[in-house]
Image 1: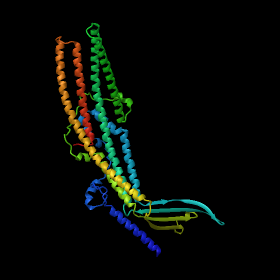
Image 2: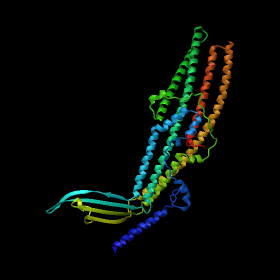
Image 3: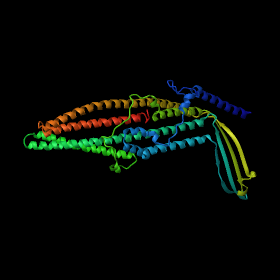
Image 4: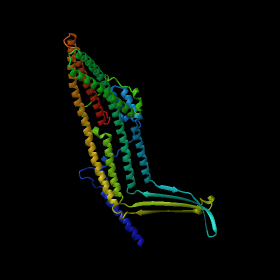
Length: 472
């Protein structure tokens, strides 16, 4: 009778605890948030939408949207993007990370299934005057009844991490493609800067030589000659710096495409005068674009995982129900090992209810609630950051376009001024020195215009990254 009463008390404690924990499933984790960890029927549609499974894509070019890069009308740039998709080491690691998380899902899912162990133990022993050999073959099976869905919740939580790794891979492909495009355009930009700077250096050298002759004839002061020499030397130094920047960017492009930096001499690029973007950038973007960004979707997945972790932490208060079985074969020779006379078997079950854990279970539950709140704040932060990045890219595009338009007007005026100077030089009104100085001014304006044109193209790439390579 005492045994029956003891068992009844344990069962009643377990059931009362289960009722309280399941009722607590409907607790709202944040007073200001609409996210809950309940199973309310009214939220089934929203939860079904949020729990859509994300699967990795086999064609990684879907991530980078090669059609968008085609708007630059540059096959060389497209080749570098393709090379990066196929060979970039960071992208390879991102894909391997997905495989790693998938194996974690498989491993956790195994906890929902029965386990079976078998062994073979030969031995030899004696008792009193009798000695004999024996062969022992134990087969054991165990299974935890997942009545409250705790193990299944753990599997779902691990799967959220797996889906988040897929989104990380997508973000990595977009980021690498953006980096390749940005580096490539900056290299082409430096090609333009180097060519124009070389022309400026030639002019400054010619100006210095003319002033040297004039100084010998007493027409130019030594102070002006020194300034002309300084200007020439500074031009050479600026040219060297531009070449250094270009070489470093070529090294960076090589690494991004999975190649050795020693091969940069083979790296081709389009003529800077031919590179042009033919796409249309909208003035406004629908907010739905943000919801399709991989970082936004990852934050959503991590929020869902945090909610599941809270449910799991609550269910740690519930009793665990286990079934077990044992089959044992024992014989003195192998021939009779599998006979029924040498077989021993049994089956049973058990229930374990945590009664005192020193506060560990409650502390774990509170920690999971805090983690949920952090995930919620991160979700809100990613939402705001995404809007900021899209808006920043649009503002940069519009402002830089306006800046380029004004600079082109200055360029036209400078061309007209230089044309007038050429006419005056031909008429003998101004000296060669004055004409060279006017030409240098025009080259400096050309550098400014080319720089702004390439800055606009880089703005387009920033916009591409902000909208996660979507077609809008």
